[in-house]
Amino acid sequence: MKFSIIVNGAPWSSPSALSALHFAEAVAESEHELYRVFFYQDGVHNASAFVVPPQDETDLPSRWQRLIDNHHVDAVVCAASALKRGVIDAAEADRYEKSGHNLLPGFTISGLGQLVDAFQISDRVINFPT
Amino acid sequence: MSNDSLVILVRHTPYSSHHARAAMDLTLTAAAFDSDVGVVFMDEGVFQLISGQDTGTSGFKNVGKMIPALAAYDVDKVYVHTPSAARFSIEDEYAMDGLLPLDDEALKTLVQNARHVMVY
Amino acid sequence: MILHTVNKYSDCISACMSVADKEDAVLLLEDGVYAALDMDDNRHFWASISTVSRHYVLEADLAARGISDKMLARFNVVSWQDFVALSAESDKVISWG
Image (cartoon, rainbow over all chains, first blue to last red; front, top):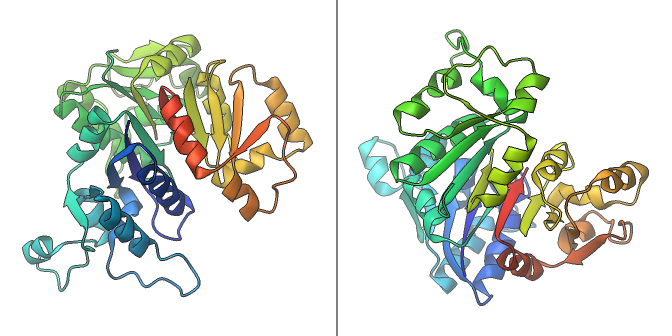
């Protein structure tokens, strides 16, 4: 069965990003396929290389990266949500003449069409609201 | 609705959070990708349907003006949960024509039969 | 069977129950687990609900809140792996929050 997951919460702003991570890890280790993880609204901050986690808290961006690397997960960051929140890749930094870029390797920036595709292709779509 | 259907339940007021915009963006994108999408305004979400929203001073993007755009983008399944509209006394103030009424039983049937349901 | 998930202790539980069917299941996580606490308000609420026949609560979030041994008997404690299995067993998952 194909699962997709929607992550709406920023690291540490609400429990939802961590819930999404635990669920994603459980899917990846199960017999089922993790088709896509879609980072939407404040969830785009999970893909930021500029996040410095407190020493005694879960490093969410790194944990997502590990999941992406270990299980070849398609981790998509919503472009519109990301731009508004200052999560940008090199191409956008160039286009918008910003002083830096911060998209973590392993994540790709794309449009909301990728979420619609996830709904069209996946058997189950699990949303983690803030 | 078809076996490929996506039903979006809109439960929040128009300017409290990102929910109103997110629901609208997903609905329009789903329609653009030929998904069988329906959107239901229910609970406090019915406040999004009120006509005459004036965001000039506040600076918000006007949610009320986006509602009629649904028809322009081929979203023809736009529902209002009638018990919610009655509860908040807004039945005569809709921003668009052609809203399809849903009572409790019809809403339940729509939700049960959809392939996916998103709640905003 | 629809799996409804609820992550808040708020009126979204009522909204969820109003569109649920008798065969449906509810899974409480994050602050939603407080709705499984054995106390008068919750007892009355769940007794008044005629929809939903399967009740689950996420173990990790109960433990985090120190209420693992204070739940209503109707709730079954589940792991993240169980949550995945329930999702697969269901026809779809609806997240209320």
